[in-house]
Image (cartoon, rainbow, N blue to C red; front, side, top):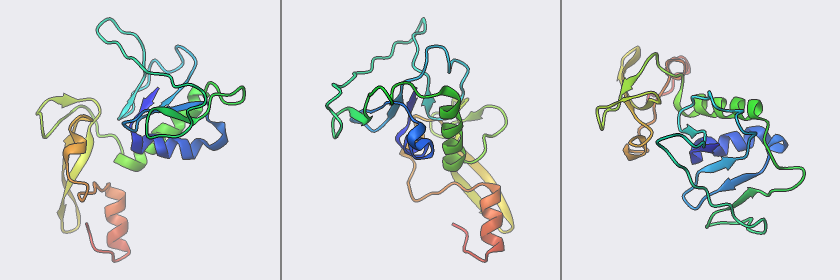
Length: 172
């Protein structure tokens, strides 16, 4: 199971001692070990179930057990008898919570990526137009193009916009 760094960090914190072994590669993504076949139907933004498909291969370098610090690929949670496989259901809950915290609720249906103009099943809100009393148009990007948008733009869910207005905070 591969998760983008932002989601992976949140999920790792949420799992705490209930996590199994976790590898972090030099680019930041986190990899959990789960039982074969336990996550085949997962659909979360910026999360990939690593499996062999007819048209896709994934290679993951597994570091020696002694590599527990970066910046190269290393074990974030070392492989031990107590930390081996992560319970797939608990991992899904942690990653789904991280997904909602990072990106808000999942929009209905497929959305077009603003950058490549292709439909994506993993739309990530990258910009929200403000309109005085409610959230206006939401701009989405696919996981590949979402990092290209400015970090200063913080997508906002309807709930957070209403909360900001209620609390008298300035809208972002």
